[in-house]
Length: 460
Image (cartoon, rainbow, N blue to C red; front, side, top):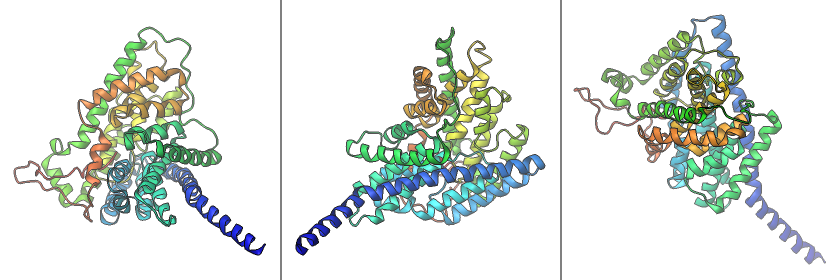
């Protein structure tokens, strides 16, 4: 009897360890991703509210705060936390396209995770035009990747599954868009559907989503829009025009980030090479100047402006999307942690507001939704992810076909200007980065050296 009980206890212990390794570690990681995503979002929102309070009390203070915050972020990132710059999505793509263990050990460490949160918080305190959703992807991937330590015999398949699920769960929890998390993993991160990974992926998204819903409640990111049962005349034309306009705008944005040597003067490139912190301060000064010119609407991610336009309570200048683009480029050129999802949606909303002057008989909210998905699809060149994100954020199921069409048109137009932004930026992370960051060399003639990197635009 004692022998039977001992055998039973041994079998039970083995079974428990097996279940823990197969499910428990992964579930624990997904829970952590959901918790960190929610509290990181609250931290960023609190930081920007502090900046807004200071700006309202002292309207000219951003001319000091924003350059100082930009310079500090660049100094910290380049000196101590190489690999944390940008949104983090290119880093995740690089890990998935490389030997996972080696690349993840460089780009998905707990040190990088802490830097992503801390430095982006400093950036939002300075009013920079950054989003938190992209960084949450790298944060989620880093959290899950480090859970591999609990597996006694971790391998490349387990590590890849952890990274993919963590990244998708991070995006899902950040936007409260579970379908978008799945599509994002398939379309953007892996560019394929892997049956053996699908269950792990969906489970991670569900767990992280449940945690986010438990803390924030059931909500839609931008509320709900009313599309109506029938669309007005010329609606098809509005879809095509919106797709073309946002495709051109998003394509130009990608071209500017990927071809900095073709439009930034040689003197500024030399400044960036020799004194990156001073270059960052100059970018911060430009961001502050644009913000003052725009009445403060270009500071931060642009979430409030986009939602205000959708709800009809915000009245922005026709130049808002262009000014927001300038501020966004200025925020990313120095190379600091921060994403482009939310700012892109805000810029798209601005273009929708402008297009309403051409199509006054169409609901402004509908045009804004179309332009949001169009600009996001143009920047990411991931049309399915873009329309699913916007559809879930707006509860806009009545606009599914229109959103799909706009996203497809804009992404194809954007591709005429530049390759997919995230994939292009991920290539610079395939090999280990020098620390501190290498500086591009500019010959005396003013033309860039052939080996010059894309360090001015290390973001997605």
